[in-house]
Image (cartoon, rainbow, N blue to C red; front, side, top):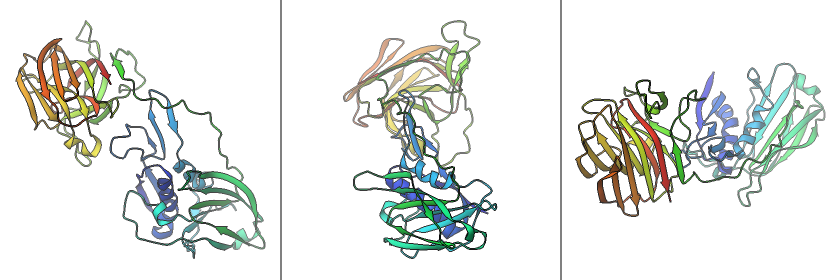
Length: 415
């Protein structure tokens, strides 16, 4: 039993739908793979991160509630609405003479589902692997049903046609049933189409209410993390790229910082690709240029602990080690640094701050045009640092290493 356990990973436009239609069939036709699993199911992370919108649908604005049921969802329905785990593929040669493919599945109880796809090369390229050239042309295909399927008289028909010119795709539309005459039927196939022919009458396409309209991330955003019984361990809208930032109840603090956000991973994980050596969580709008970030910080690691706030952060995910931006660091040894990168190699300014571990301090980072300045506890600590690039990016918080540290009263104001 071969499974394609991490497939698709392709931008979810019409070409992504073509990729998904092709591999859902051809992984079995060419590779005998009986399961194809899409990474990822729903694109619910900032679009400008690596693999933006590489989910079957998009829901990346929790602040607005906007989402979009993209074409790959309806391509999925061609298979998943008319089969179930436990159904079996029929062992037929699924290559069509004019290009494209078909698969046939049964529940073993008399039901039959046939899925046909005629995706052309340029309209079905996945993000990987490179796709060798092939031709698909309009054709008439004739199918012969044998054995117990010889008695089938009609098949329900569901149809999609991906349109790459005018964006008027037809997605998962029910057509008139197809008559089967003495165990055979013919069907005319054009390019970039998907058909499901099935004995099942349970298919349906929901008519859901329109989602709320899209909105940019709020340009003035605050979170004090004051939530006693959070429904989720992580604060909304923060996207951890390395490390894990969770709600924390600070039982030793009777004052203003009982409820905080805490970085809790204190040992470098066994990583996929390459995590950073620092922890970082991003938030906001990738297109922000001018912004002021303020956050209360609490270093817990004595001697060599450290934290940062940042703006114009330009990367994450698999590229997090090369992330650039404007990073304002304070360390438990009483020093500070301003760097142009997460790795801390491009030092723009450094000096003494008087910050110590196990005490709350307020950091403010102000970036305007080509200049940045920083405040500690409301007083200027450094100013007039020249910023050449990046020209835009997210806000962020993080730590020097995999260490405990707390953050509170986060505020970003951007333009």
